[in-house]
Length: 303
Ligand SMILES: [Mn+2]
Image 1 (cartoon, protein in one colour):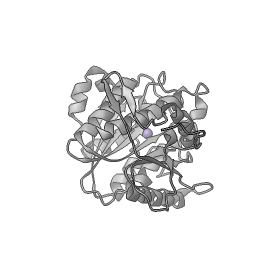
Image 2 (cartoon, rainbow, N blue to C red):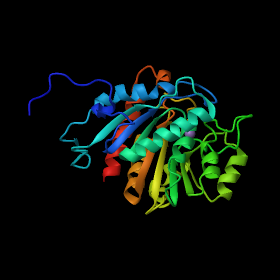
Image 3 (cartoon, rainbow, N blue to C red):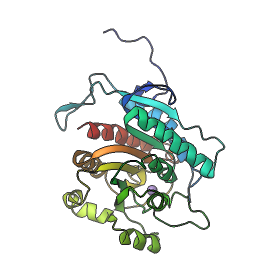
Image 4 (cartoon, helix red, strand yellow):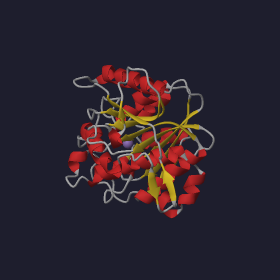
């Protein structure tokens, strides 16, 4: 095959650009959710889908796949990935914006076996999970420095500190949440007690550092899993470009191992990658690390 003279610009990892309202089917697809109206501290996550697409050119999908030398195997050969663009959110706020996110997520689920939603701040996980209301025994694995289970922040019930509280209220099918990587000194004690009372699995970053295998054994097994990857689970020395970084976080190696373990043990039905704020890291490293995490997630899901 001769090499093309020019390549289409813009799509994540040079995937196929698709209209989310057209008829198509793909093995996996990305959809940007460019909003950061719900952050409590430093904004900037609205720019992440664009930055992830730029950084993902480092991992433009070769038809033959990538040779992973650490495992001496080729991954993602002939990977059928679509890029369905960004949810049209400009100017929208509140439930109007959330409804549009839920509608777009439903549309993507109909067209791709594995949707990956590119945030955006973490508030988007609530409207995204609403698109999974029909999945019985749904399990969520949340990689995150923060619990994001607060009832409210001030008067706001839909901030990036509350998406999973709203999700368990709205979705009777959401059976269980495992949060891994928790740390920091700002945890809301009411949220912590409420999550424990509901039986959620809460794992600190300390526990991951102490014994990763033991943490892996606490992950769900044989379940439909939605994976929510908040990039602030990573240590800020690995990924500084995020709104609310927390010191003493996970290494890339640890998060990659956790994603692989989740995918190996369960059926991934969807995922989000949230809270990258690319403008807070002028080196561009954070976007490159997050793009790599997305590629590794796809490889893990494929097995
Ligand atoms: Mn979060």
